[in-house]
Each structure stands twice: as structure tokens, then as C-alpha cells.
Image (cartoon, rainbow, N blue to C red; front, side):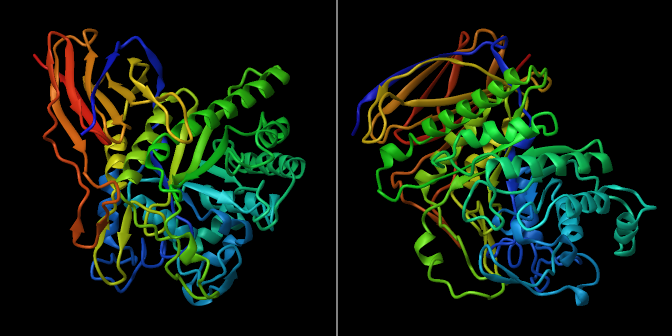
Length: 504
């Protein structure tokens, strides 16, 4: 048994960080592994819709309330010709997909995915190929997707059976172009020039779109953050966001350090913000650059198995990480990192949504189920709408092998004034010590506890598998409020959602 520690917080409605853009709860579907085929699309499945989509998966996506989904990649997009995935199915070519070394049958393409997103109540974040292609293919795709009719590519879409334009608002200018692994990898100068010219052409077709420039593909890249500074020097006035990508793992089995890894993520975000603001100052610009953290997750469990896969099969199982309880705790912490910088982080995509490093798993021809990470993602997506507040926090700190001064209490606070709801998200990171938390909420008169959701488990390595869900939340948390003070007990290594609403 560990010790009982104490933490205090003060929350006030005037301590506003920023409005939360719901798109920070986005996700990602790439033509990779069983994300598309056997994931969102399986025409022979018992639950399949008339379009071939798995209804059981759609239901789980709706449960998560995913507002936007990035598509079609990812590494795959840097070698992808979008024209291969439109038109009659019988005419679509089967192509070698070089990024993941599989065969892509192109049964699902732009139109099918736009239709799936509509059924999932999500927008599409479309990525264009700036690896093997450039300005021409990108502007044509915008015309195909967004113009009503009367031009070559809009009429082509109509001829393919989609009279209404897809009206895709958000577009990524390539993917991880800083990475030597990327097909068509470019230097920062090469990418900056190409992205800027592509952005100008795309905006000429549809001035209403928002554009995301490629930032660094992780914080360890030797070119970070010079890549951001150089590419933004070219693209600053033409784009609205710069992307960040980061994955975490615990291969050393050091759980204490693992649960502190969001300290790295916070540093990553702060460094990118500083770099954006440096370019803003250098250009004497009035425009603020926002951040799109459009790939993030835990990813390490399946890497060894993936490296042994034979090439050129269709939709083999790839990157099928089976998540455990400590992964769920870290995912909750990552989402809180976004909330803490809601003034600048305006979009984020948990990568990915189904089967491939995903909160949702399926069996081909069989059921779908929720992985451990499903729950904190759902909690923050559903209850984290409104403004992000800056709590004043006093918490014990501790050291791990990799980090010093780790705050035991990790927290983020969301206030929805319209619905008169206040939500406190909390993580007790410590593996042994519990935490008695007291929260001053006198600024929220007549607010009472509605619910205290807890995700806890004695086994950090507990997993959810088909028909056996070992990790799931309960609503037996003991939070109570008395004279404007909330008190609650956080057991060691546990995730909490304390929901308050105005009464009377």
C-alpha cells in the first residue's frame, strides 16, 4: 500500500484558456492494415449497410462523437493517385501501395469515404499527395470534391453518382514530408515552396477551405524545430495550421516514466507555438498560426510482428496493438494536454480509429469491441465541449527514471456555460500513492455533483479482448461538494471524470 497524498485546485469561470474546437477529438483512417477493409468497410458482414459499411463500427464511432476524420493517409497518401479510387468499381486498378507494401484494391475511395463520414456524423480532413504529385492533382481533387457542377472534375463526380459536392473544409498539404521514409521526401525548402504553391492553387478553386502544413513527424527528428521555421517562412500566409505527430510507447516497461510522457508532449507543443510566433514576428504578420496534432497515440506493442509480414497482400492485419490499462491512462493525459493549450491546438486526430492502433477492434465477419483507450477518448470527446479553464493546482511531485518533478495530479477543466456544466478531468499518475483531491469551485454557485466516472484497475497490463472487457469505467466515484468545495479520492494510477451541473 502506498501513502495518501493531498492535492488542491481552484477553478474560476474567469480563468479561460480558450474556446475548445471540437475537432481536437478527431481521428484518422488510413488505407493501412484492416482500418478500411474489415474495419469501416466489410460488405459481407452481417451488420453491413447497403454501401458496405459495418454498422456496428459506425455505432461505436458515434458513441465516441468523433467530429472529423483524416483520410486517406498517412504515409500511404504520398504515393496515392486519388483518381484510382473513384468511378465504377470494376474499372478501379489494383495498385502496389509502397508505404506499407500491400496491394490496394481501391474498393473504397474519396466518394465512399465521404459517404461513410456523413453516416458517422463526422467531417473529412482530406490529405493530398505532395510526395509523388503536386499542385495539379491537389487542385483537381478540390474541384472534384467541392464544386457543385459545370466544370470537368465536378461533372466527373456527378457522373460517378454524387450530385451534391462533399464540401470538404479541411485539407492537409501532404504527410510527414520531413521523414526520409516518406515517398517523395523533401527538404524543408523543397516542401515549403511546393506546399505554398499548392495552397495558392487549391484556394483559387475554393477560397473557403482551411489548410494544414506538414510539421515535424515527431519531436526526436534532427530537423525539429528548424523544419517548422523554414516551411512556415514559405507558407505562413497561405496556411491556417501546422501539424504535429507523436506516438508513445513503454518498451522498457517503466510504467512510472511512461505515465509522465505527456511532459514531452507539452514541451513539443510549446516549442511549435514558439516557432510559429517567431515566424509571425519575423514577417510582421497579424495572423496567428494554429496547431493540428493530427497523429497521436500509443504505438509500440505490434512493431516486431509487423516487420515480419510478407508483402503485397490485401488488408493484412498490421499495427494491431492490443492496448492495456496504462495505455488508457496515458491517452487520457494526452487529451488533457490538448485542452491545456486549447487557445492554439485546434485540431487533433487519434491515429487510428479502427483496428490499426485503434480504440475500436473488429473481427472479420465477427463482432466489434472497445479497447481500453476507447474510454478516456470517449469521456473527453463527449464531456469536453465548451471552454478550457486554467485551474490553479497544488500537487505533490515525484521523480522517475526518465523525469523529475512529475506532477502527481494531471488535470484539465472544461466549462460549458450554455449547458451550465463543469467537468474536471483528472489523472493520478502515481503507481502506488493515492490522492485526496480538494477543489475550490465557489466561482460556480449552486453547482452539484452529477456524476463521478472512474477508470481503475489493479493490473496496469489488463486488456480488453473480444468478449472479455477487463478495463471499463464505473460511476461509483466518491466526489462530493460541500459549501463550494469538491472533495474526491483518486486511487493510485486512476482516471477520473467529475461532472458538475447547476441546480435550482
